[in-house]
Length: 524
Image (cartoon, rainbow, N blue to C red; front, side):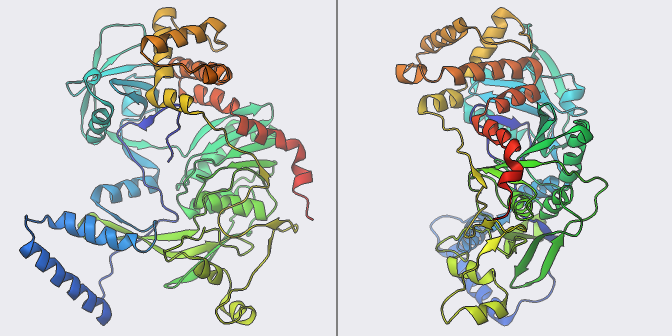
């Protein structure tokens, strides 16, 4: 999951690992074939020599797990991975849509931890913690004395143990102690939901987990689905997750029994995924927003809705991850994520981008995209057959890696100075200062002109140079960011996210496409 640049957001004491189609298999008990046994013997001989003669004692876990196994997997493709105990447990938690933690989203900067949001029913929520609370002490360690990395390490190390927090509520100066015990906390995959405009719903899906289809349906129903005239479905920065969840999401918008994808691999039987008949289907027009961080299961949904002419895709070309990981449990509660096959869209294209120097090359992807009999018939020796791909209504779609949007919409690019301000947390820090001297702001608050000048003075007091060439052209962005940061601290992250998204030029352009959907989705 990509961390947004304007804020470093950390789900307190939890983590995630995202894989496409995590299919769990038990460790096999059958004996290895002779050639595998022979290679294992060579490895054992090499390890014995290293262990006996290396200048210093060798930690076998580090040498074999971190060195031998991970090195072997890295020679295959970048998606294969060895999962140690903690990583494997996090993956299983993610498949359930849960994580062990306290249920807070934090803003973290050197010497500073501020709560932006707490999940209802979580340990943090039950303790009464909320937006704007300043965590000043963690298990007796003063936050103000820690650098950024030490602070992050402290949060991570405490994620699965009881913790005592010293917290200063907004408007107070004395810290109050809270003793929290970690618990399984639900991690919503539909993390932003609101009405973009009357009749137009906006949903951001951050990942695809087992409960994602139900979350999408629930969000639409809360927004009064029968009265909606359109859905802006944002899959930007969605790295994927479970393919079954993407198929379930497709079932909400496509006709029953529609083809979503096909998976094939050397050692796995071909499997065809089709839509089911969900309790509710939603026929409203859809504009889907994607970018270069939209990957795997998110691309499955994007391709299915595009090729069935069900959604207009806007944004930037997607990542291009079209492989299936089988997750196998090993001994000592570890796991192995191994690329076992590829998936193909309804029209038959592979969206895996070719990776030179790996098993996922141009040739292997081109060959895999065709059934054997068609490849043999249409492709000569050493050549592969070119294919054209189309949607149901005849619109051409591209192959060769990722999903190409129907309408290209470039993403916003921050200049180096704005990126610096965001990374260092100066905007959030100033918002805190402003609230401490002016009190809470109203939801309708708009930053007055003098606020920007005061922010500039605050930067200069902190010895931050303000380049004139950036200051003059960044006024609108700074005004929006300050309003968002104040809203985060006073009204919570959900309201701040809504303001930030509605001020996003890429999202604004995507929302403007609803009047042209029928024209742009016409077959040629």
